[in-house]
Length: 180
Image (cartoon, rainbow, N blue to C red; front, side, top):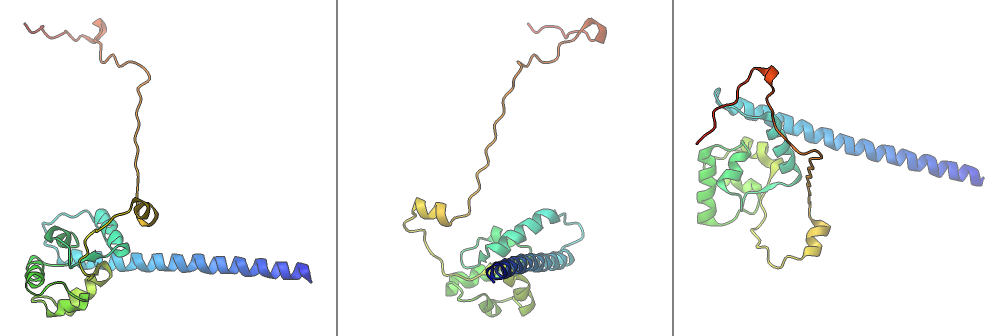
C-alpha cells in the first residue's frame, strides 16, 4: 500500500510538472504570436523606403511585453521606438499630458485627439498608465533582490608579444622611405 501511495505521488508530481511546463510554453507561444502580429501591423504602416531591423524590433517588443512602457512618463523617443503611434498621435499625447495630467488608464487614450480604439488595442500589451512616481529612497538590497540585472564582463589577454608585420626579402615589398 505504501509503495502504491509513493508511486501515485510521483506520478501526480510528474504530471503537474508537465502541465506547468506546458502552460509556460503556451504563454510564451501566445506572447510570440502577439508580438509577430504587431510586427506585421507595423510593417504594413511603414513607408516603403523605411528600413527597420525586425529582429531588434521583436526583442524590443518582447521587453515591452514583459515591462510595459508607462505612457505617463514616456518620452517622445520611447513612444517612437514602439512604432505603434504616429508623430501626430505622440504630439497629441504630450499636449494632453501637459494640459490634463497623467492618464488613469490606457483606455483614456480614447479621449486624446488622433487616437482610435484600434491603435489602443494594438499597443495595449506593451503600454501601461501608472502614476508618475519619483525614486524616493532607493535601497541597494531591494535593487539586487527585486531588480532585473545583467552583468557582462569581458577579459582579453595576449599571450605572445605582438610584433606586427615584418616584411621579408621574398615578399618583394620595399620599406617606405623614413620620415625626416
